[in-house]
Amino acid sequence: MTFVLDCSAALPWVFADEATDEADRLLEEMARGAQAAVPAIWHLELGNVLLGAMRKKRIDQAGVEAFLSRLGNLEIVVDPETSDRAWDKTLDLAQQYRLSAYDAAYLELAMRRGAPLATLDEELAAACRAAGVQLKLL
Image (cartoon, rainbow, N blue to C red; front, side, top):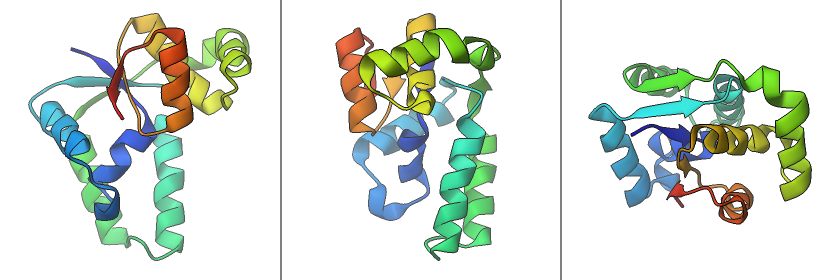
């Protein structure tokens, strides 16, 4: 089954101090072929987190490359409609649930696809619950 993968749900796969059993199970599920859908901002958002972690010496270049290589083996599909919905439905959801436009893009995608959303972001999880979107990971 396809689910929407928030950037926060992938971070435990690279940072040991953020690891959880749920995140490990999610990674195993993806390694077995589960497909994750992500909004078009996902790669940039994840790249920004990794860049910040490198600047803070939390991870080195080799660690980033190993993580990105692992991600490359997973079925992560970029949604082609993210930008088309940014100025209408996504902004409406951001306003309604008091989210950033970035987080609202994940919520919009999950709602449109009728898919559960994997996130560790408490505000996004609360918005999912309020909108009736199933959560895959907390």
